[in-house]
Length: 204
Image (cartoon, rainbow, N blue to C red):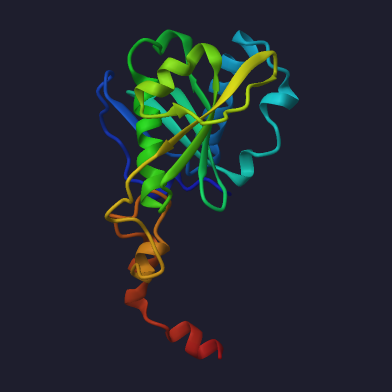
């Protein structure tokens, strides 16, 4: 009922080494995200279920990374008044050391910039601080160190330049209603404009 995967043209062939990162758009893709996070956080890091799936998943944007047809990584983004928070970054064990985590973070940064965010915030495990620094983040001035789910964390932040094509109130209405992250591609709603407003007129 909620699966929009058929809206996308069928993939006839995918190179097994090709990597893609995209916004989750279907329950099938969300199930893949849950599987990845279960394998990484629950199985490897022994995080309890209710701590990993913390009530924020349905108020967030999720990115999923595929290598060929196989889901291998994911990340969650939540939006606040003047910053976006990157969290729940996970890459399956067998696909690590291939630079996939960096590609996912870079895609998340680009998505947030297109949405108009210039300040990105994350909680870095202290042992992974170098990774975030490699992608432009830095430990915040006055950063607070804290712990949850049995790991130590610190606050990191990235301040970026304004994206030249960020979505704002002056954007074309059709651009604003396109699927998240696909603002450069015509969507199904603007294609429906060819039918005009006859149905609305008749209903009125």
